Amino acid sequence: MKRNDEQNNIDIFNILRAIAVLCVFIMHAVITIKTVANSAVIPWFLYTPAWGAMWIFYFLSGYLIGKGFYKGKYKTDIKGIKNFYISRLIRIVPPYLFFLLICFIFINPQWFINNTKILFHLLTFTYNGSMGIVGIGATWFISTIIQLYLLAPLGYRFIISKIKNVKFAFFVILSLGVIIRFIEYDLHLSPFLVTITSPISNLDLFFGGMLLNAIIMESTNNTNKQFLKIFSWILLSFTILASIILVFKGGVYFGMYTYALPSLYLLSMLFLVYSYDTKDKTQNMALSIKSIISNPLRILEFLGIISFEFYLYHSNILDIFARLISQENNNAYIFKTILFSFIITCVFSYIIYIIIEKPANKYRSFIREKND
Image (cartoon, rainbow, N blue to C red; front, side, top):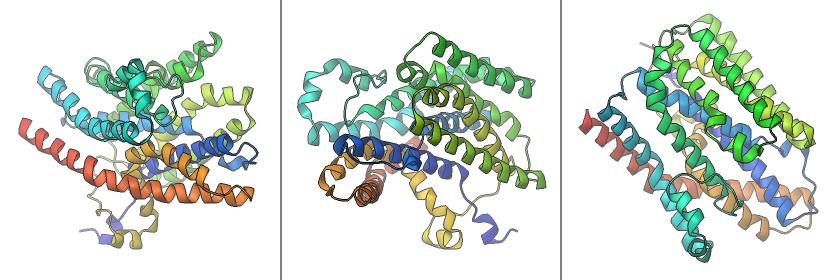
């Protein structure tokens, strides 16, 4: 029997969600502050890669969905695919619709009434972020991930589960990702509307995550993985730092970030998740004050748990505080805007998580058990 402190490990998935949502939050804080106070001078290290965060989310979604298929939690017959879609919708739709309702009531009800076309795209998960609508623009990610979910069962049944040479398959996936983005760049297609928001342009990240399970299912914890963890964190840190520098410099450097770095994020995630996850992974302690005191790094998991709500609401809360806080001192204004917005977003997101997402997840488990 292992000691409790040995089982009080970080949940790598929630840690990565927390890192990703922090990158989104800080970058959006920069954009909001520059919009509200156009004279503000933003330090370079605050230009965190919001799009890079999306690449992390694509990979994690693919990996965790793939784990369900590989372990038999999801089936690929007609009934199984139906149950999979129902499970995903119960996970996504309640918090998402509640967010749209909040926006309708408190932000701009007239906009929803006058823009029925965009509202249609929002409700059918076909919104790609066009028009840059303030307050709901980030919901494009929900549409993209739902579209990837639609492809997941068939992709697993007819492609992923048939792969024998996994290493060669990873090479093909990485190569195709590079080729697709190179073609998009060469054709001067919109980097946001095509490269970032299109599910086709992110298939390498999503299905690369799914395929990683083929290795994890045979993987055990060993000494080599301890060294790989260190290497993986260094690689991810380098990737994020490179992204920050390229985003800050802009111009042709921003193009390098958009088209070249997704593959580096994919490699980082492959190594990092592989180094932490195993087929014989023991049950970890539930997140609590006691577990956080014992392992302070686990406090980041809280942000990972509420990351969906945090992602949805952070832009609107940032906009409110950026306008409320005095702009007399540049550094103090930036710091206060980020700090107060972060705290309020965490509190508000946790409340929404408790009243919307947590009950929905319980109902999802009930439905799954009933179908089994």
